[in-house]
Image 1 (cartoon, rainbow, N blue to C red):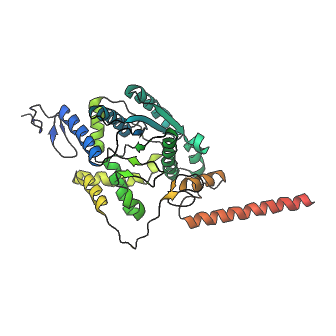
Image 2 (image 1 turned 90 degrees about the vertical axis):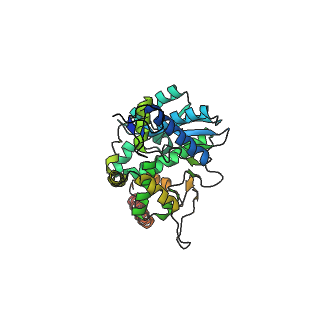
Image 3 (image 1 turned 90 degrees about the horizontal axis):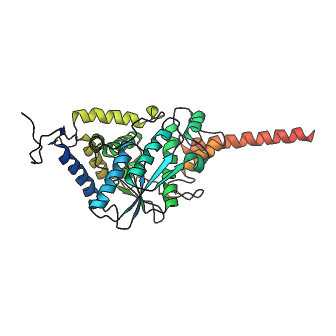
Length: 343
């Protein structure tokens, strides 16, 4: 006997929602997904009429669904938003160059302006070159730090009011687990925030898909026949996040609600007043958001430019020792050159 849609529409159910376990037909699932994203936006006051919103577009399933849903809801509920696409080209041959073609198709399909910024024009480096210097270990540190700042740079250039990212429920739950495993209380405090800002001059970021399961995003894209890029980054297999993701998937097989449960746990975490938290401010060098002086992006870039690619990896004291040794060797070479010229 066929299972009927739980919504009561009378249609035959074709899916079982990973998030709730409810049997739904295609139409009711699409309505439920869009209604939940709309509720998240309204309940958390993510936007105000007249806002210019940059959608961080990578060409993947999350950003593609985010762009489509934002356009749909903006028209349906009269949000009064101007939507633009902002993409970052990290310079990864065989990955990002292909995914940007998908972003360009999204630009045409959704009729949104598109701005593409590259690591090469912002920092003078591509990820291919960085990996050539640092190797396959810790390369994601460079990419993550540079990408976060590149989005801020692009948003400032475009003059937008906020950046909407495609972070989904799985992403956030993974981040909670990673920060717990690392003992990173500073990031643990803010990683579940649906809206983040670091002061009056900074451009806030919002996560409209915060409570959307990754599996449901894939299902939505499938039913809507959205075009997205699904190839994994060639440098991603060594990322630390992969271990948290594998652990989360094991937990999800036992208890499907674990993703939302972890997010809610992260939202409710409280810390003693004695716990020190770095204050987020502005980098004295580049002028962008930072919780240290100089910011992580500037430290990593300095290391690359000075031939010390591991300068920003690990503890700050280690980096300071590396710089001191580098300066010592530089002075020694200059002195040796000076003595040679005296003869």
